[in-house]
Amino acid sequence: MADADLPTVELEPVGDGQPEPEAAMRDGRDSDISHSDVCTKYREAAKIANLALEGLVAQAKPGVKVIDLCKFGDKVISQKCASIYQKKVKGKFVEKGIAFPTCVSVNECVCHNSPLESDAEQPKLAPGDMVKLDVGCYVDGYIAVAAHTVVIEESLPEAPLLMGQQADVLQAAYIASEVATKLLLPGNTNSQVTEAIAKVAHAFGVHPISGVLSHQMKRYVIDGNKVILLRADVEQQVENQTFALNEVYSLDIAMSTGDGKPREAMSRTTVFKRAVDKNYRLKMRASRYLFNEVNSKFPALPFSLRAVEDERQARMGVVECLKHELLHAYPVLHERPGDHVAHFKFTVLILPSGPTRITGLPLTANSISSNKVLDPELSALLAMPSKKKKKKKKKYTRNTAEAADSETDC
Image (cartoon, rainbow, N blue to C red; front, side, top):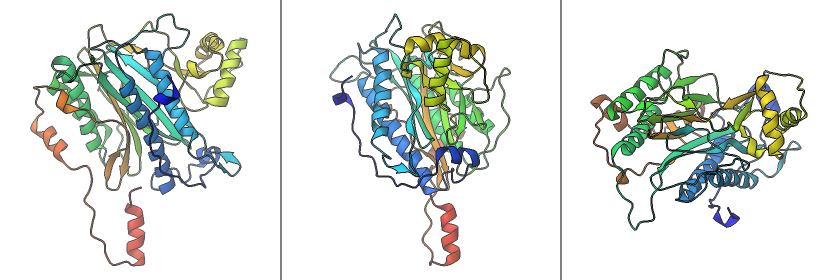
């Protein structure tokens, strides 16, 4: 797509003086959102991720190729990242770019669909398609991710009202994300969130997608050790964890009208991440080429083979890299044909004033009609304000100033 198609946004200016990425990764200093410059970088990454998502929603129309949408989303993020933090800090440029390659997953396809130029089939969107759009951006290692679901409509003067199973699964996934956000409070646990999501799904007659995880995120870490299960399963269990102030989470919600147990598709896996704890002396020239590209350009965060300069070499080399566990794969997952799948993802900061979403788009509820009703407990939780009311200012003293510093939002 041409440059003229790129949406525009006013980005706030940001300051210099950031720590060097390598040093900060080693000792973790000044890397949580209690530091204003860290929070600023999260918010700058979030603005760019939201901008890409808005652009993708606008571009998602009948006849548009999935690969063109993927390329468009990546292009927006790359171009906007190039326009900020242009000065060197301690002799180095601040790293920024794509934290998760743009994925466009259609209908029963759940996630991770990011096709290559060389793929024989290049499907186009059609009216009625349910399309999941997934993006990620980072600034100085601080990551913001987002996903949104749209239903492709024909060009009509007035958008038709969405009803039936598509409406139910959309509402369920979005309301579950709102409930989960409300529960991201210091002292609450990941199991509380999983249980609440199950109640929302039951109310709408849909199923959470098995295997979907929400992760704590840290600098250059998109999948931290603190995890929230979307669906409690015997096959997959996680340790009970308690949320804490100044943590950052990728809240990942996916619902299906099917059984919620996706299968790996025949589609080629194209999204991978370096397994930083593994090493091996590769034999094939193509494998060594790909591994060198990964180590130099994508050492910590997910990437698409489409981003590698020599795609043919990358496709050949990825097999040996996977065989020796040098890369983690993000396989394309599918429900059964005819199932409807909705996916929303938000980046949430746990701030003193309450959990705050910095990415994601609102659901246009006025164009969706569902007759499902939540139970009183969930309705009460949704009605609760997300933010604490600001206290009246007290007379300034040294003690009150120090207390205020510890409770100030970024």
